[in-house]
Every structure is written in C-alpha cells, then in structure tokens.
Length: 500
Image 1 (cartoon, rainbow, N blue to C red):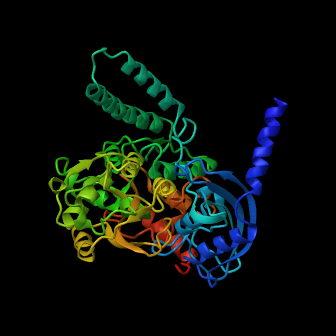
Image 2 (tube, rainbow, N blue to C red):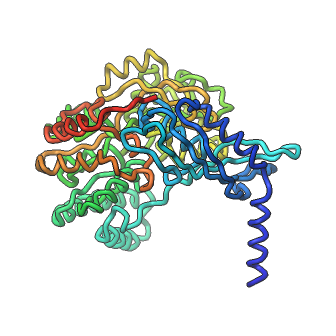
Image 3 (cartoon, rainbow, N blue to C red):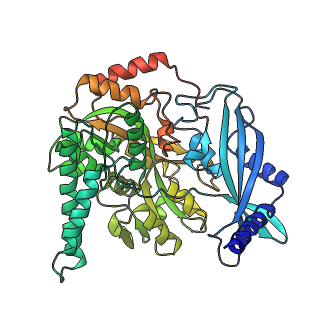
C-alpha cells in the first residue's frame, strides 16, 4: 500500500514539474485576457501556477497537459460583468478555463474600480517539437443530475422509485416505444403530484427543466438562496419551457421558467398553444438573462450561413422544449423547412454534440444561455464554430415573434471565437399565475435581485447576469403589478453601472 502511495505522489510531482514555464503561462493568460478585456477595464495583477495533469481527452497521438493556475484581476474602471450584450462573466469563464465556482468577486449589478476578482483557471497545452503550445481553456464538466436533497424532495425520490418498480413489473413483451409512453405519462403524473404536495407544505414549486440543464441549475441556485431565508422552493424536473408553461397553467406549479417568445405564444394562444387558447392568467415576474440562438457546426465545416443547411443533417432540439419551436422559426426565416433538410433529429444538447463530433450531424440549433457548458466542454474534443444569422432574418423574427430581440454573442464567449456573432435571442423569464399574493411576489423579487446572491458559488453562470435594470426587457406577457412595484424600488436604490 505504501509503495502505491509513493508511486502516486511521484506521478503528481512529475505532472506538476512538467509543461510550460511559469512566465510562459502568465504570458498566455495575459494574452487571452486581452482578447476581450483591455487594461482600461481589467488587469492581471498576480498569477500562481497550481500544478498540472495529463489531459485524458487528448486526441490519439497527441500529448496534452492541463495546467491549473490562480489569477488575481483588478477592475480598473466600473464594469457590469453581468451585462447582456458585452464581454462579461461568460467571456471570463471561457477565456480562463474556469467553472462557475472558480470565479469570485463578481458583484450583482456591477463592479467598481479597485474591486478584485479571483479565478481558479486552467489552460490545455499541447507538446510540439519540445515546446508547449496553449491550445484551449479547459471546459468545466457538465453538472451531474440533481440529487433529492438539492432542490428536489425526498417525496419525489420515493415516487420515482415507486414508478420505476411499476415499469419493471410491466409485461415482458412491452417494447421500447410502449415503455417510453408509460414513462412519459408517469413523469407527468409525478409532476402533478409533486406540485400539489409542495403547496400543502406552504412552498413555491418552481417548474425548472431537465435535471442537468441551465434552467434546473438556475432554479436550484435560487432555491438554495431562498432556503437561507426560510422559504421552501422545490424544483420540478421537466421537459423544458413548454412543459413548464403547461404545469403553471394547470396549477401544478406556482412559478415557472420559460422563454419570452414561448410565454407570449402561451399568453395569446398561438403556435403550440393554439388548441388550449390564451392563458389569461400568465404574468411575468422578471426577465432573467438572455438565451441566444446557437447554430453550431464543426470548425472545419464548409457551412458558413443558414442557407447552407439545405440538404444537411440538423438537430433542432427536444419536443418538450421551447428551444425547438424557436429553431423551427429560425429555419423558416431563412426560407428553410424541415423537409428541405436531409435529416432532422430531436436529441438533447449533449447527444447532439456527440453526434456532431462523430460526423453523424452537420449542425445543431439550440436556444440556451451563453456560455453553454456542454458546448464549451465539447470544444476540448473538437473545434466548434457558431454560424451567424442573416440580418434580414433577424429583423423579420423580431417583428414576427414578440419576446425576441437582436443579439450578439460577445467575442471569446467560446474558445476560438475571436469576433462577436450576430444572432437572435429570447429572454429567460420567471413567470407566475394568479395564485400568489402581492406580498409574496414582492418578497420573491427582492430576493431574486438581492446583491448578496451567490449565483456563481451555487453553480449558475446565468444567474450572474441578473439585473433589475434588464428585468423588464422583452417580457412578451403582462408584468405582475407587485413585481413592477418591487422592481421600481430596487432600480431607484441601485443605479445601473456601465456595460463596458
């Protein structure tokens, strides 16, 4: 046993001693930081190397090393790093190869000159002809699924186990399609039961999204903050924004996350909500953060614009997600229908990225907050590129789809993205019906935009983009009167800082 420990320690020491010199690392970190932030905004004041490890994801035949470091940055002029349309938290995390918990010092509503940021970052280096060349920042690992005690409830875990037992007891000749149908119906029943049980406990059940997705991560971070205030907010695992709107409408959730364009469609009974008619009770609490349209291809692909997708294999997203509806609208605005494509798939983002890497897809369309951790992590295995939307299509979509707006994915949001990418975006929204009192809504708004919220520490990059100054942007549905009152009070006490 002692011999094994000695070998392990020697391996660690060897890993720590190899790779680029400290001055090379500092030069590379400084150079990357300058790609998005000049010294007039942010300055690297200290950098310490913290060891290295072999890159397990290195392509065959390549010798790659992950080098870890701690960096101290000084804010040299007032800057809102949560601003929607300029380099901020997303660019910092991508440039420095950090996870959300690896960045500290970001202030909700903006930082002032003299503030200090600290980053636990990492860069991947490749050895070539005896030299170490910086390749890409390391992408943080996509989060694991939520455990029962992290935003969910033990009741839900019990029900899931019971339903799993029921599925295992189904007839032996039940095929995959039949079992999926059973699973889908049980999931709907589970959400209904959980929502009602939560209300009995005086909680605020929030319809989030898939358990490892951005909505769930944001919802769990907010739930943790409320827990410290003595407020119970169970997070419901759902199929996505469309499912969330249904749960809210049926009274099985008191709060829901969804896209602003999908919320507009639900409020007016359009599109996917035409058969149900308008949801006259749907109201907005706030816009939270932007969700830009990502059209992702391999970097070496010949595809340069949306019209090039004709005859190609394209993933448009899962049926229960609001992203899928937006993806179809994006295609139509560029004069493309699903029938014009060679193949249309409905995979989740992680599956789609794997298919893109393996040459089984030509492109994927996803509406998601930036940086999307799955996309960032995938860039370690193969180079990716974002395709811009056509300016005329963006203008038409803004006019046709309330809740949509022109957007630019800031430079360096993803590795190798040297320039901003014009696209369309929607706002992620917190929505409610008529079941909560005005006092409850006001309190939730106050806590949502509290300056001491630890969004990054609690694992949500997108939470750091919240600001009372953008809370009314592109709502698409009526604003709850109590939310409006609370937001006006917050805005008057916290003037906006520059966006850079």
